Image (cartoon, rainbow, N blue to C red):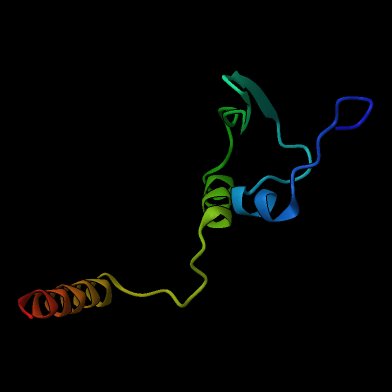
Length: 87
């Protein structure tokens, strides 16, 4: 902590949370320490901005897949797990 009370949040954490320069952070006192959390977005933010925040928090960076492809993959994994549970 700096002499001004400033704390550096590691870059990897900021990126994972989608925290950019200027984000408003709330400090909440907890037993044994403090918790940092972003202040709720102000009403009026655009859908695109909301989707950007969601995308920034998502670890998935692969290609877009259809609902049908997702459904097929879920069924395949379920079948594999069923086969393993029989052994």
